[in-house]
Length: 527
Image 1 (cartoon, rainbow, N blue to C red):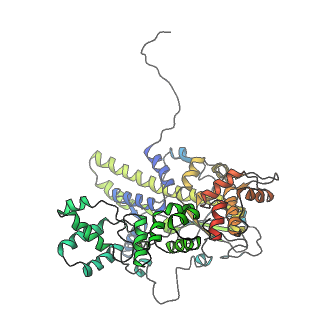
Image 2: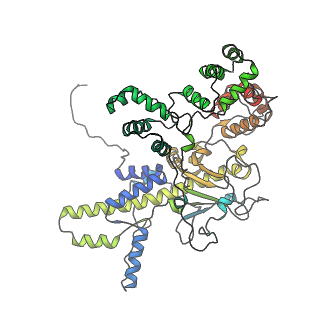
Image 3: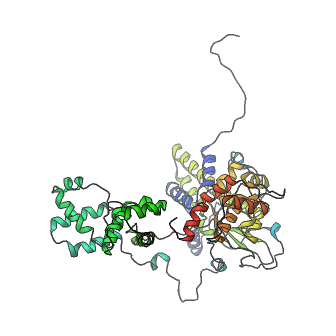
């Protein structure tokens, strides 16, 4: 066979990721915040896309004027390109559980396979069984669909309107600065030093660069710093933890020689080495215990009380509630669904006005892009709803009885049940949240690895095992601390086949200390 360049003609089939197909795949993994930002950008770039509310208002105005409304293009009228089947040709073919809801247009799933006869279960009630720790009360979900009415005249103010202005840490220091520092130069130095304080209230930056920047003597900067170290709260402008504790103890007039030595040997306090502390401090064990308790009352981060973080609530993508007579109702959250339509009236108007070939080509491309986006948004919504419904069906034990009954689940289980690819399920469950009677959970939470059963029965989920370990540790007394081996013995007695190293790994992941550490903490002793 000769070796050399030549031309060949081959026939084959390949999957080409078109820009539209790539866009549809990206939309699946977007969170509701990212999706809203993406849609806003598309609305700004594509003149044929209009928010549903604005377009409906325009139609209403034309109807009042006697003009017949033009036909709107939505997800039902937009024809998807043939490459859409490459994305997932089974998504829209098996949506038997999708039912159209009321006037809001949100697809609703009534999971008929979950219509079980729960004795103590009704619409809006929490099912019987242990409640997940830190889960919000059921009353948070009882008023869904009520329009937010509270019984007062007029709408209630938004959360942001009820927040009062909080004084920041630096504002607090500046307020004291005007009262204690009168010299303009010293005040300039103080303002500069206040800007260098970190979030904990410490000043770790060297002073020589400050003196060079302000063109003054280092001694003057140090003098201003000493004055600032007397400001409230006690311990601010400390150079390190030991310095911070010393400032607070000095403010309480408790910084005696023995306490100074104790502060200088915090490593021995962390090791709970009482014998070494007694030796270096020159006091007995009782005094050491009292001194350590005094240190524990101090604040290692003086600026922490001034940190005012407003927690931003998570907006769930899926809403789940109990159905009267048993079962669940799963629906998409209308607040997270972007509603855009294609303005066919404007499309016809500019198409007739276009003269050049480039203009007509641009209009056609924008029209196809708008149709594809509407179709992709609809496909994303139905896919999320379908995956969420299957998750609820397979994790029914968790919702009715608690986290102990969370089943081991992997992506393949959901993918096989709804006839989708694992990668599609993975994208759908990323950054998506579901509001349930037991709280708001990320969809990824319901996927846990399996731990075998010691009795040969059904496997247990890793999350339920972690919850059981935490419950055992919380229930132990200071006189009977459970070791990892004892926890393994208890779990195996309950039918959970688990190794000691797995228990230690789960315990450390939950921030639970060893049995020795827990015994010291619960007994309150230094050793």
